[in-house]
Amino acid sequence: MKSPVHRCRDVEHSRGQNVITSSSASAMWFIKDACGIMCAVITWLLVFYAEFVVLFVMLLPSKNLTYSIVNGTLFNTLTFLALASHLRAMCTDPGAVPKGNATKEYIESLQLKPGQVVYKCPKCCSIKPDRAHHCSVCKRCIRKMDHHCPWVNNCVGENNQKYFVLFTMYIALISLHVLFMVVFHFLNCFEDDWTKCSSFSPPATVILLILLCFEGLLFLIFTSVMFGTQVHSICTDETGIERLKGETGKWGKMPCWEAMQLAFGGPFSLSWCSPFTGVTCKRTPTEHVEVPLGEIIEEDVIEIPLE
Image (cartoon, rainbow, N blue to C red; front, side):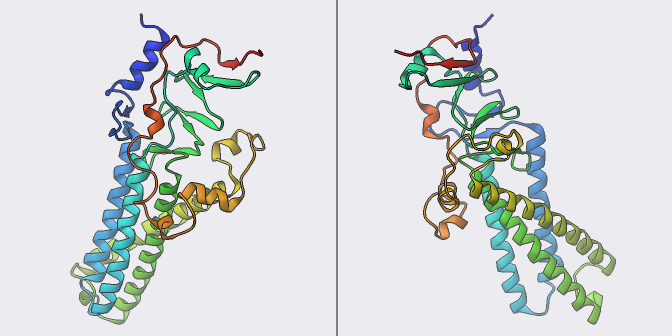
């Protein structure tokens, strides 16, 4: 039977476990969760459905070329940014704590002050930093974990919260844009012949537009609430799990604007709205720091002895 230290490190380096990763700096973060992967695929399919209806039902058959070009450019730009944000939120390490570092040698390397207390996660055998929580899906402790979102198949944490915020914002904007176009298309078709409003038959056109309207309204409400919740969490410097567990007031909270700059990667600029700036999809450098070998300590609460 393997010792606890071997079991923890085997999980960390195995390619057949919950997270696709390796000790290489080029490894990409990806959670192998069937439910999360299915939800992520459904998200992309719903966006592609909206793309299909917007282009082939509303814009291409339109007689107004300027209307089609302007709305087509805007819609496709927002769609591209939304899917890019989703991909970055899904494939970015949210701030995972290295597994198997709960050893005496590692604690000594931290050079903590006498009397300080550190905590070991009994599930992933790691020393938990302040404000880190264990995710049962990712099977890791995540720094500043807000929640695990199946729609991005990842935790929302310290390193990828920006991309999740951008994803919810762009989906909300897409949904709002779609609702305006659907209403305009219905009004335009009532005044004109329905057979000239779409390359599809009138019944098929109505069904496609009603489904798109329902999808847009549903996602507008859902993503707007999520966007507002995430921005509120950033401004109050308090994650969803911390509010749920009543852990507020246990750390010095930073001002709202400072917290926003930290989450979005610097002073306010257009880069805040870009999913291509900020944290890389590759695993964070701290993941590759060599963990001092040694036996995993048994205690879950470790106090540094006084000198």
